[in-house]
Every structure is written in C-alpha cells, then in structure tokens.
Amino acid sequence: MSTRHFLSMLDFTPEELSGVVRRGIELKKLRNDNVLIEPLKQRVLGMIFEKSSTRTRLSFEAGMIQLGGQAIFLSSRDTQLGRGEPTDDSARVMSRMLDAVMIRTFAHSTLTEFAACSRVPVINGLSDDLHPCQLLADMQTFAEHRGSIKGKTVTWVGDGHNMCNSYIEAAVQFDFNLRICCPKGYEPPARFLQLGGERVSLVRDPREAVAGAHLVTTDVWTSMGQEEEAAQRLELFAALQVNRALLDLAAKDVLFMHCLPAHRGEEISQDLLDDPRSVAWDQAENRLHAQKALLEFLIQPGARPA
Image (cartoon, rainbow, N blue to C red; front, side, top):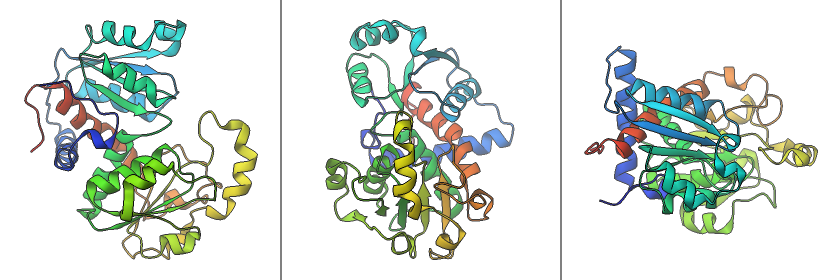
C-alpha cells in the first residue's frame, strides 16, 4: 500500500473522514474515562514549524504522548531546511528516521514537495492554502453537539483564506451547504469556488448570510504574514463582525465556532465566546482528539476507521 498523506480534506474519502471523526469522539471518551490506549508505542512524530503555534503544537505533541509515542519539535532554525537544504532531500532523510511528519508552513508547495519524497505520512498542520486538521476538529465538534452535518447550512464570515478553503473542501466531503460572506476582493481562489460548485455561495450581506444557519464560524481578519495590511483590513471587514445580534438571525440551535486565537472586538464581539451558542473551547480541545484519530489512522498498521 502506498504511503497516505493528509495535506487536504480531499486526501481521504468521505467515509474515511467520517471514520476519523467517530474515532476522535471515541478516543476523547476513553481519555475522559481514564482508559489508557497506546497504539503508537515506540512511534515518533516529527513536527516542523515554520509558522508559530499554540494549539497545533500542543495537540500533536500531547496526542502522540497520550497514544504512547513521542513527538520532536523542530523550528525552521532547527533544521537544514532553514539553511537552504532542498525540501526533497530533507524529506528523504527525515522519513527514514520518523514514523510521520507534521509540517506547519507558509507555501503549500512545501508540503506537496516533502510528501512526494517521504516514505512516511505527511500531515498539513497549516499552510497558506489549507488547514484540514482544524476542519477535522470542527466536524467532530458539530457531530458531538448536533449529530450529522449533512444537508445543514454553514456560514463562513470573514476572509476567504486557508480556513475558508478547507471549509469548502469539507462542504464537498461532508455534504453540507456553505455560505461565504467576505468583502469584494477577499473571496477564496476560483479553483476552490469551482470545487464547491452548487454547495457554495457568496453572500455579501452578513445578515442574509447567517439567516437560518446551523453553524456560523469566523477567524481573524489579519493572518500571519499580513500584519502590514492590518489597518486596511480592519476598515474593510468592520461590517462583518460576528456578535450576539447577528447570531440571533441564525437557526435556533446554531453553533458558533472560531479556530482561535480570537481578536475580541474585531472579528467577534467582546462577549461572543461566552455566549452559550459558542463551542470554541470544545472545538479547541477537539484538535487533540481528532488528530489522535488521524495519527492512529496514518501510522498504525491496520488502524482504519470503520
């Protein structure tokens, strides 16, 4: 069997993604019940960080430990990648010493080039194009609180960036409808909109976008590497703040998510994370459990979610 990677939600079948989500829920229950399960004993995950992180590092490192394995943290200054070694050379060497590699990077091509020469699974911990691990956690969170997301309406409010792109992929794989509300000029790339097809629509008015939605989600308006655009973005996105009044227009059982960190007073109101409709803290915790299921699926021979 060829090496499986997880660079995009499209790398797994819908059935495999649903299986990973179900296994994440199961692993979370086992953890809460203090049941020790160590399928990845003696396995090692290498973690390459070109972008800083709190949740990604903690969830992958803690996840490997909880599954009986270990994780090695490498910043860009800790590897020869940071000194100009070709990505494919690094992949050939690292994949002879590790059981999987997680990369959090800028250019998505870094991931695809590394994966092309890697003997072991490569996981996208975030790139400028996509953030599929966050979507696994989001899908697990919705499933825990509301059941199947199939046929539901999800509203993305904010920049059409990597998180929005991954939501488009998730809409295709989990069969839900996605409304995207963003300023003109900040839409997702055309290739992602084409991928979404009829499942995805652009809606400029945030009130119209959230009307009747079952899940409303957003992210910061200025991502890493865009700091020079911050003032311009604050002005352009000001009308898209998600607050309690906006959520009141959604379905009665709406959930609100934010992948964090949040800029309170900007993309969300100061009090929104404290609203009972917000599940952002469960969502953050589920990075740990969803990624444990992902690691088990990719590394453990024969571990394939049913």
